[in-house]
Amino acid sequence: MNNRWMLCFILVVLISGCTGENTDQGTDIGNQQQVVQIPTVAPTKGFSVPEPTTVYVEIKGTMFNPPEWKIVNGTTVKWTNMDSTSYIVNVDGVQSPLLNKRDSWKYTFNKTGIFEYKCSLHPKMPKGKIIVE
Image 1 (cartoon, helix red, strand yellow):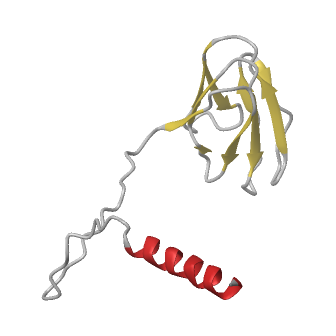
Image 2 (cartoon, rainbow, N blue to C red):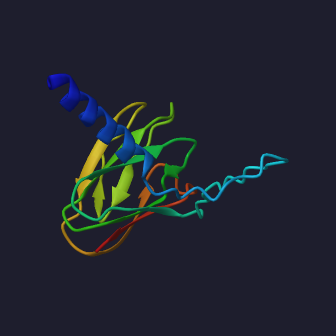
Image 3 (spheres, rainbow, N blue to C red):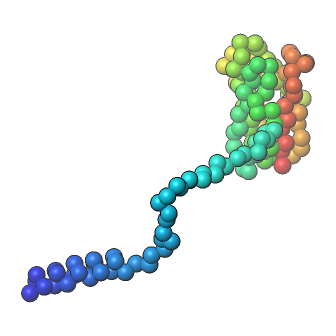
């Protein structure tokens, strides 16, 4: 008797697996070409941050990278010098100490606005921008 129930159970499982809906439309096995779409990303000048956190700016090749951040109030920006040249970051009337290679400096933005920053030692160096919303 047990064998009959086991056999019935197996048959029910097998039959239910065979009655599923067939969504395959069929394929032509001839010359097939697969088209793959590669997503593209539009270039941007900077990045955006939706909630307070710490964001990072590298100083390298007398450039700030990224040159622009869009952040929310309370976000900290950390500048790190990746060059052998020294820099002093000047933002919102505040200056960092002298940043030698691998040195970092943090500044927390606690008011909304657009803040340009620059290097006090290299006046021809392109400025960066922090947009605080």
